[in-house]
Length: 289
Image (tube, rainbow, N blue to C red; front, side, top):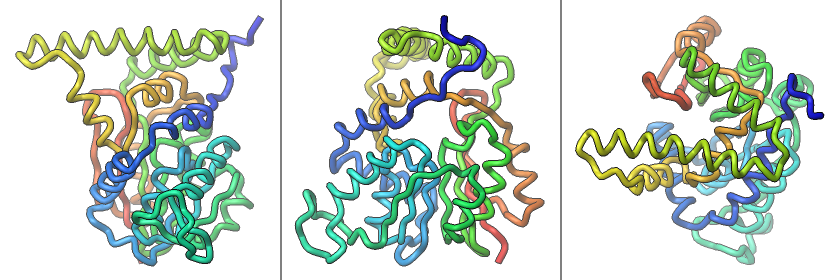
């Protein structure tokens, strides 16, 4: 019988490998626009950029295309391979030769290093040095030690640099129910998991459609799905898989994120919350110089 007390760690890399088949110029442009908006137009040229838990590598790619010197890492070997695949496909060779699969916006790869490692490995992350921009979007709440992970990530931010963070919002009882849904996902045999994701997703999509209809809007989800595509270049299906399967799973209120960082010498530059909904609150902090 499977162990129902300790769910398995979600294999994010397998989901990202499947997502890579959908990555094209339009998705890359959407991700670039999203990153630019999040950073409020910060010029990335020549800046050092650390992508913690790089996942598919899409954000690392657009940061590199914008001229940043990028370091990407992830504990999941499959995520590392995904990121390497994007670098090979969309960036030029280290010598600058034009033998990339795509050349538009391509950048030499010698300013993009990729490694396998965990944010909780103190020796590893310390060896990376500090960066002008540290990006940890939607990853630190999956480490199993979120508070410690945030502390280690913030220390990678150079004086005067930006710390970009996205953490699941604490909805109280609703978050506990989502934790139960995620636990059950990991109890299921692997072949049933896509069916489970589809069932949960359909249930919520029907609820969303009903709410749109009752408010006098078109009940079809086309606009919402297109917004998802514009939001960081994501796809609806892969986002559902990530959300329902993502474990470990921790949540936090804005106060629980902001106050410790302010006390550590960071000032809040930007915040975008999900209100009473579910998903990630986004934060951009500036470290004192």
